[in-house]
Image 1: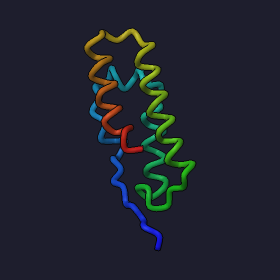
Image 2 (image 1 turned 90 degrees about the vertical axis):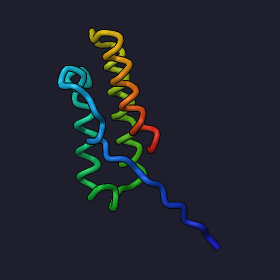
Image 3 (image 1 turned 180 degrees about the vertical axis):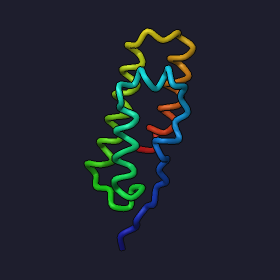
Length: 88
């Protein structure tokens, strides 16, 4: 007997960032949201889609680390992204 485990995934658009923080992500958050919406909120998603969402969220974290944001803004942005990224 095969057991199927259902996981809950969070919508990448639920990431709470200021406009200044969002600018520093170089569009990676938007790409993750586009994949989420393109796959009918993950109903038709493949493994590649899940991986691409995770990669885009990881790239957003990297670009924030390299940005010129103040330290506290970097920390809060990374925490907010990682809350969603952990589900992928």
